[in-house]
Structure formats: C-alpha cells, structure tokens
Length: 294
Image 1 (spheres, rainbow, N blue to C red):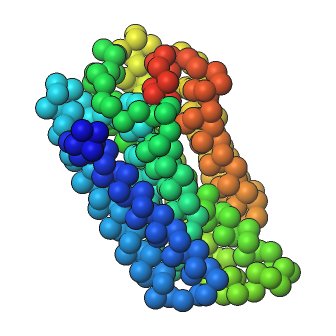
Image 2 (image 1 turned 135 degrees about the horizontal axis):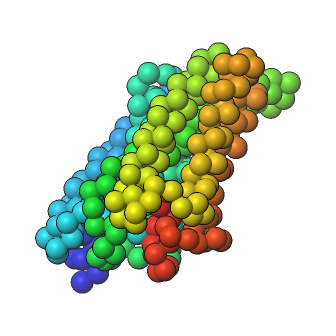
Image 3 (image 1 turned 90 degrees about the vertical axis):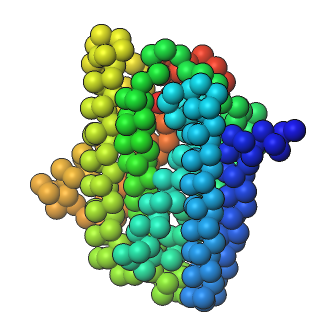
C-alpha cells in the first residue's frame, strides 16, 4: 500500500533517483582515482537519467496535488523543499558541464545531492505526504518565490563546489594531489566559472527576495518584518554582494574569491535549514515537516 501511495504522489520516483545519483557519485569517485574519461561520461549519463526521473516525479507529484484539491505546487514542506534543492543542484552541474570540462565537480555535486535526497527519503523529520498549506501560502507568489530562490541555491551550490576545486588546484605544493590536479581545468577557467555562476545565483536570489517582499505585503500587509529568515536572507544577499563588490573595487580573485564562494554556501545552508531549526519565526509553520522558506 505504501508503495502504491508513493507511486501516486511521485515520492517513489525521488527515492529511485537517489540510487541513480548514488551510482553517479560512485562513478565520479572512481574517476578521481583513475582519471578515466569513459567513467566520468557514464557517471554523467547516469546523473542525467536520475535527473529525468526526478523531473517525472515532480510532474506526477504536482498533478497528484491538484487531484486532491491543492491548487499550488507542493513545495512548502521540508520533504519537497529538500528534493527540489537536490534537483536544482544537479541542474546547475548539468548546465556547467555543458560549457566547461568540470568532471571533477561531479563528485562534490552528487555528494550534496545524495545527502539531500537521502534526508528527504528516509528522515522522519521529512514525511512525504502532501498536506494542505495554510491560507497565507495558498498563492502563486509561492511558486515564483521558491523557484527563484532555489535556482539561486543551485547556482551557489555549484559555486561552492567550484570554490573547493579552486582551493585544491591552488595547493600545488601537495604532491599527493598531482594526479587529481591534472583532472582540473586551469585556475583561470575555474575562477571565471565561479564568477559567472555567482552572478547568476545573485540575480535569482534578488528576484526571490523581491517577490517574497511583494507577497508578504499582500499576505500580511508589510514588505519586511525582520523575521529571522528574512534577516538571514539579507545576510546571504550581502555575502554574495561582497563578492561582486570586492571583485570590482578591490580586484579580489583567486583564493579570496574561492573562500567567499565556499563560506557563502555555508550561509545559504544555515539560512535554508539552520534558522528554522534554531530561531524559528514567521517562516516556520509549527510542524516538524515545515519548510524553512526564505
């Protein structure tokens, strides 16, 4: 019976996709030690297959939600937000991989996506059942707000992985990294990719915050309330604005830029999950499965 329900609401597809992502992770892990491009191509193909399965899961789940009388896509609870987080992280890597030879990045991305999908699939804190949302969330502002924010999360997740690769690449004195370093593009290419990805993410983060403010005004009569989630969304925005400002006014690049990319994603994760668990506010809807919305 559980399997039937999982198939109907699409959650079974997310669990299946987890095993594809794990297989891709294993392939990229082997690639790091062997440098075999065939293995990396197979791993990328497996990851795309998992991404397609996830896409099917979202379509089925959203249709199911409409059939049971929920007019907005199910993105509010922790389960749906986690699987969507994994989805945009993978999407970000697929897009980057089309333009850059960043096979080594696949190891980091599949690791993050696997952890998110595993938590969503097996944690008791993230039940997969679709529940009606509170009246304030029954708006299409919700869809635009969350999609914009999670697209930025996907970009920042990719910049996090690229930042780690840059820091490893810059540690040339470590002879044990010799084989691995040959798998990475030049530092200049990684730096360029980090900048472009962060700009992309910042555009969508800004859009998500603006949409959220407009939605808050229509729902609660005010654009900004200094709720903990709002405050940390501002901190996240300022972190990445620091990156842009320092790059253009101070000429920052190299390790400084890479460290901001890494630290910035830590801020994103705290804003996304940590704030809701430690200092809940208006964006925490009083249930263990509620999503920490920005």
